[in-house]
Length: 278
Image 1 (tube, one colour):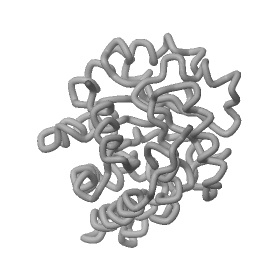
Image 2 (image 1 turned 60 degrees about the horizontal axis):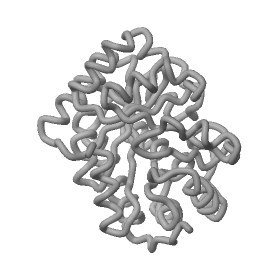
Image 3 (image 1 turned 30 degrees about the vertical axis):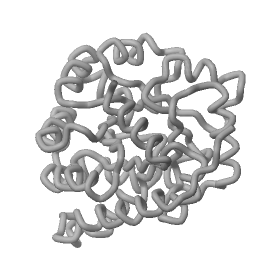
Image 4 (image 1 turned 45 degrees about the vertical axis):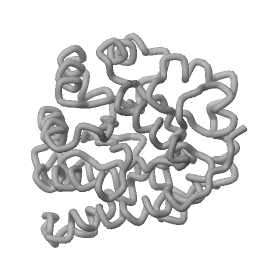
């Protein structure tokens, strides 16, 4: 059983949804990013999505775009992103780590080299927002052969005709994008989200994690009632930004800003009473 499967099995046994936290690797610098990463599980993160910085993050809103640029300006590269995971694994062998981002940095690194290095570092899965199922031979299938989960995105516009194609080679969990548009753009409609999760579950036995637009503990609790996990990203990277000094450097507040928000979100998720998805 993979770390992702083990974590969702444990959550199901506990009868609660999980909290998936997104942070950008190397934001605002390598050392602070590692401290944030190390602090997330104790703060209540059940799964960590680690963003691979990219100069053109087209699906992301201003907050995550800015976090990518901060990381790149601080010298973050793919080798350092994998090094973050390796260092994290020195003290945590249980928390799943999923790398999220775009195909270009992986292509430049080299697919075979990347998959081997990611697996060796302790990465559990990938989320690539710009590779459709029609391109599965490019990365999805090689990733599965390498022992990495390939998490697919479903959206409000993914209808029942399209879903089987999207889900065909999906593994780990399904990431349901709760709004149309970019990350952090608006708060999701929880009634529509719950209905969408029910619909997707008719097509797959994989857990459904819901993200985009979740910012507060109240949002997280509402989504957690009908989903297997709640994903929060923009709010966390915005917490990083707001903690920085005038020069854009980390302060004594930066790590706490992220872990304290994570703890509040986790409390919201854990307070939710689940709605049976039938």
